[in-house]
Amino acid sequence: MARGRRRQKYGSGRRKKPVRILFGILVSLAVLVLILFALSPFVSYAVKATSGAMSPAISISDTVGVNHLAYLLLPPSRGDIIQFRVSGDEGSSASGSDSDSIRRIVALPGETVQISDGTVYINGYPLEENYRSGEMTYGGTASSALTLGSDEYFVMADNRSNNFDSRDSTVGPVKGSDIIGKVWLRLKPFERFGLI
Image (cartoon, rainbow, N blue to C red; front, side, top):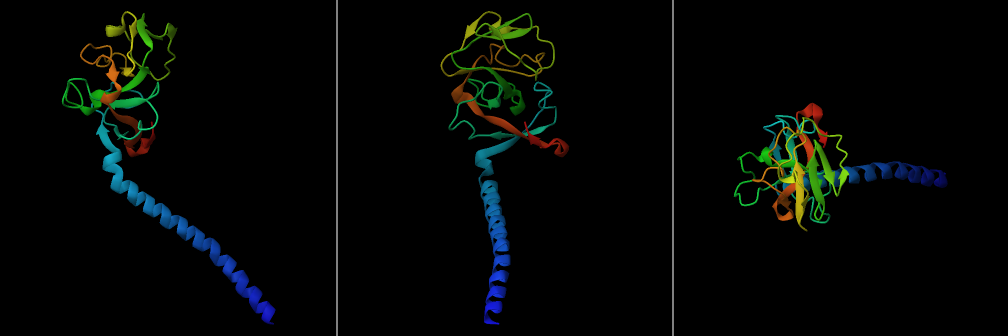
């Protein structure tokens, strides 16, 4: 009889344990979400696209999140969409719109970039770009071979008919110190919410 009671108590304790573990996990997740929410202005902020320069990845009126801490440990990579400051400009972009300084990195420090016959060449090899749209007729600063410095990135709009990027001499190659952060999340419209 006593053994039966012990087994019953032991059995009921085992049933409660998974509930406690699940409760602990949920509390931990809630605390983590609160911490991230409290830190979010320092880690990430929202920018609304006002042009189709990054179409189709980012459409006009999309709201995207920019992560300020993305490059603390690892450097930017080819294909990353970034927000940057135009050198010598006090604001975030020469034209005054945050979304005008959101572009994709196509060439990295030390690489040679050239645009010829509508194709981007990196170190003499054509760059595969399945994200681009629009016709590119303007090579600008990269019409002839341009070798980037040790802290320079060549950025371009996905919609290549938009020339406000490193091809434009008022923008030119972007220095690492002028990169504000990585565009990583689409916040609005809600039906397209997700990673970029």
